[in-house]
Length: 193
Image (cartoon, rainbow, N blue to C red; front, side, top):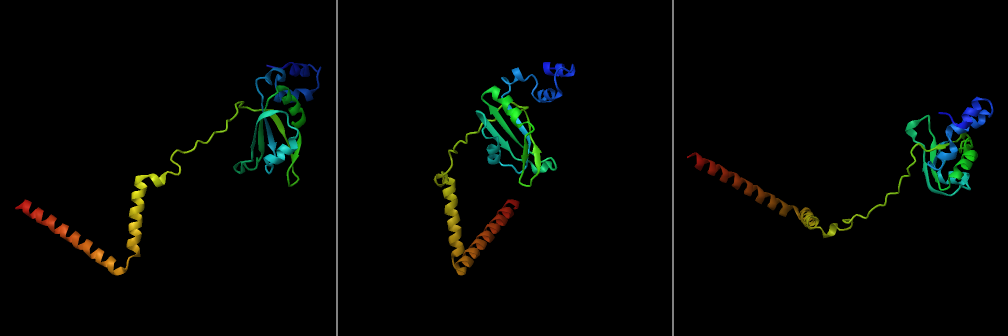
């Protein structure tokens, strides 16, 4: 379906410069109330959020501003973008008229003409509140951790002991293992008899 301006442009009553802008903002008089979120595309990849805010100053009243830096994996199409949710729908048209086609210049001197459109997804991402972990800082109270620390400290003491005591402990363990093996053989022999 065509808007009134597109029909008028086709009939020659209105210049085509109005038609091009209205293709990005179709039926702008009634859609702005439904779609207050706008995206600014094709921003320089090296642009920072602070630099963008400085260039957009004074920015109309808004309740959401999200800046997305360029993704290097999309080379050669490296562009940053920004999402803005305006409180007053009338500000959208003024903002579009001011910044649609506005040329941003990066630190290398390259020119990037911006494109202002309605955001395809109008919902605003909410900031997730990070809940405090209930178990944070409670490891010292955990009985399993205490048991581990005791065994770990006991192992350290063994390592720090002199070699003669360690040799004595090793010999005692081997004698014990040999004794267990002899007992098992004796039980097998008794069962076979």
